[in-house]
Length: 214
Image (tube, rainbow, N blue to C red; front, side, top):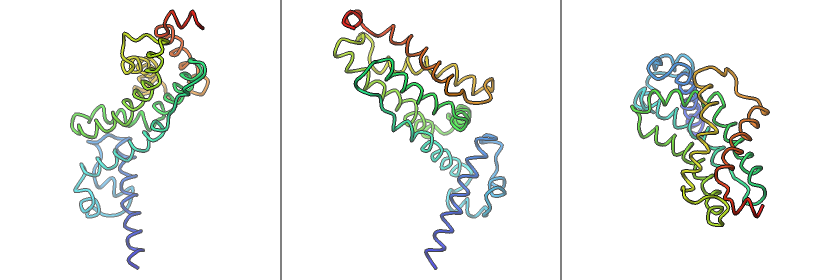
């Protein structure tokens, strides 16, 4: 009997968090009330205050879970260590765009752009779990190529990675954020954007010695 109660309680909390996440993404932090969350999820105000201490705690929990869900695919990204540079980097770029341009990721970006200053630890967690993580993955692929003399080494691997990702993501992400693009780009568009960014990037980083060898 106790196990049954525990499972029901866990389900109730999960429903609260999921409903809160949906509402915060749809309407923003300020427009959402605890009563709105309860109306969508069921439960009571007491559930919210007992488990989260109020609206702010519920927001932190909801956004933390959203961040974990969105960041999980980024943590699994890999770039082949061997093979042609352009193919390996294009595959990585397509994966990144597919993640950051999904509607939920864009909605979370909008939300934290308006509330990150109010919840700085949450903003940091989202940054390091998302953009920073992708940058470090790419930098770890770039660095050996600098050591081997294939890529220019006068700029750090991390800075090169950050510049590539900025070039790749900035325009399509901004179009999605402000509503110019109402739907995520299709596979062909993602490939086109990725290939253009990769071509531009590699032209700037491959050394003349590597080009002569290649």
